[in-house]
Length: 197
Ligand SMILES: Cc1cc2nc3c(=O)[nH]c(=O)nc-3n(C[C@H](O)[C@H](O)[C@H](O)COP(=O)(O)O)c2cc1C
Image 1: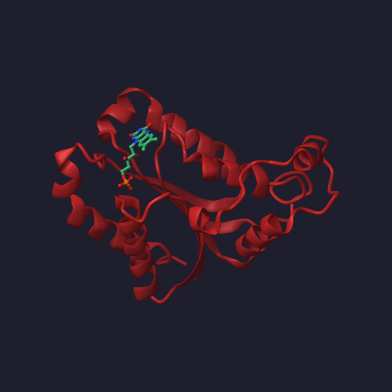
Image 2: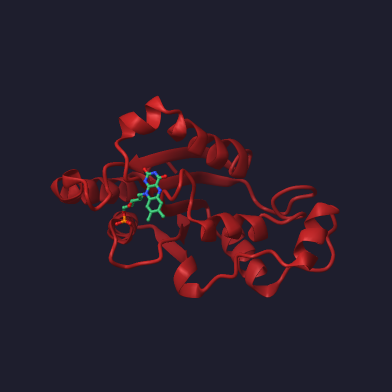
């Protein structure tokens, strides 16, 4: 299976980078291939231009999408599955990934007369500073899931999963304590990701 990984973290000095590497190792150890867009490293432009806004807002197929957007769309349609890997910033994906959706989920690709394929699987793998109990009690986990799975990925993948690695902020002693176990878990998730395909 070919997995397209959309990875978004500003620093390699992060739990998220280690989590991404462990996930990739699991994927490849189980015989799968992957392609990756590392949005910060690529310097992916995430502000919509006015031209792009007007194209999407008026439900137009013209002008053609920009070359960098097209490249991302080609990666999606060449893959069987997609995985988004990022840290939670203010109960959302980092702005750079949100902007990636603004531009890549364009009219005529992700909605309207869409040319985006329905992927076999979609996975969200994110890290959060808060304990999962707090994210659940406050409804914040639910809102993150609704936005990613109920809106952005809705109808675009046959199976979807949203997995949070919690307690990962630097002042939390559980970050270090759970480090190895969490990376092992990320590895297993990668290993099992394409199992039933
Ligand atoms: C700008 C910013 C905003 C954050 N917002 C949240 C948040 O809303 N909820 C949460 O649980 N953690 C939040 N965090 C914590 C990060 O999710 C956490 O630091 C990160 O997952 C730890 O992993 P890292 O080493 O990969 O950065 C935020 C961190 C930063 C830097």
